[in-house]
Image (cartoon, rainbow, N blue to C red; front, side):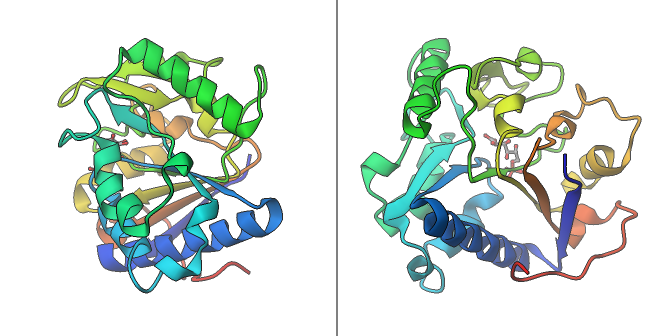
Length: 258
Ligand code: 6PG
């Protein structure tokens, strides 16, 4: 299990830029070595600026997006055109602008019965990765956010999904908003080659301190603590506002991999 890497940026704009840079670099490496880049996107609002940047003139041509397979780490159980849909947000900010081919987009069917949708998505992962049970698909990069309550994906505090150790995708409940959810499980996320958290804003500072620095904080109360890639990298892209309560020294930003 590798240690967490922290990259603390001045503000949300620089945060999006550095995260975009890293994702493009990771994608280039994956495509060079394996001919494809398997990327799982996060929902919520934080990644909107990142997705718009990736689809923008400065980034769009830096990656062969025809070789990128786009997945979703979680979804709200709503139709794909619903305002709460994570797919809808990514489709509008990234997928449509980049004209990513539909057969490279693996959408969680939030409109279907949740347990069936979770099982079907699991099947689609196993097929796309060529990873029949009990193998674990290994994503090149899984992008995650952090809720004010310490949740990530749709792994919310004290919910049944936190204990799932066999399945790749399960249904779960959120405490507010679109309650019914679909989510990657902890063991699936922990198999990834690289996990990137993108966290911005002062509302996240208390949860971030609990997750990163409070050894007494219970992982059932702060589920993001459960994300510990077994063989992969864990990198936290933070802005100063989110990192405000961390004691760690502000590390120099590394803009490209060594
Ligand atoms: C979701 C996300 C969720 C999100 C956090 C942070 O479906 O909402 O997957 O895990 O990343 O709740 O959300 P914000 O970026 O909106 O703060």
